Structure formats: C-alpha cells, structure tokens
Image 1: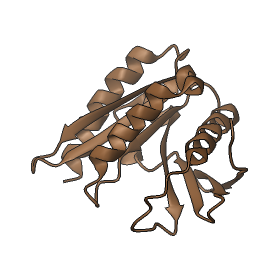
Image 2: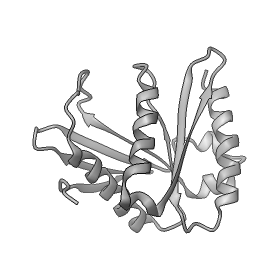
Image 3: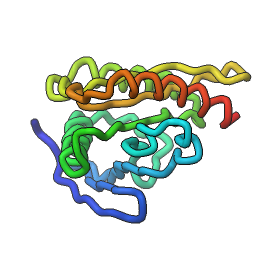
Image 4: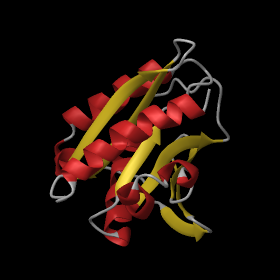
Length: 170
C-alpha cells in the first residue's frame, strides 16, 4: 500500500498524527478519549474504550477538491498504528462534520472506504443517520476490530449513545 510517512504525538487525552501530501497539504488525524465523557457516564464500555476519531487538512481549505488516494491509505495505516498502540478493545467513534452541509457525502465516503478496502476487513464498522428535531441529518459511526468479544455491548451502547448525543447537541 502506497502511503505517506506520518508522525505521532500525545497531548493530554488526545493522540494526534500528522502527515503531508505530495501537494503540500498537511493532514491531522486525531484520537481523543475524553471528547464525549459527559455522554459516556451511562455507557461503561464506551467510557473505558472509546476514542473520538477524525481527520482534516490543516489549515482546513474551503475547496479541497483534489483526490489523492494515498490520503486514505495513510489514514488507514494510522488507524492500524493507533490500534496497535492502544490495544485490541478500543472503539473508534466519529461524528461527520455537518456545519458545511456535506455530512451526507462524508457518511457515504466512510461506507465506501469501509466496504471497498481489503485491509480494513479486520474492522467492523457501522454508520447510522440520526435526525435531530430540525430534520438535520447527523452521521455517527464506529469501528472496532471484528474479533472484539464485546460486540453486543458495543452495539447496544452505540445506538443509545448516538440518540443521546444528537438529542443533547441541538
């Protein structure tokens, strides 16, 4: 797999990875353990094992239409590195950015990545759409290793957490 080199650093409850593309676009990939702690108190598995996961170009360009397949490959390698670093029981959570009304695109892109990458087959991923009271769609998902023995707990906590998150962030 052709990827960019990356670096990893820790700061507080977050672990951040950085890489730069051949077009000089810098990316940040983050994993934070306490972004949703206020919502996790009723979800012990999430409280102990979940990390908010996301990535973005730095600075965040308004019109980044350039497609670089090495970006996905690099992010996938970063996810693998993070799992090796933190352990097999972690759960990666993501909430598609929605302030630019492109959350549908991001949700579809995640599904394409999850369904079409051979190397991601070790992960079980799910993304759901939750509508808030204003009818705005929010796409929230998770990825875990498919060998995780807590899948029933993960599924139950994720569904309830997603509904709770959206109803409390309106």
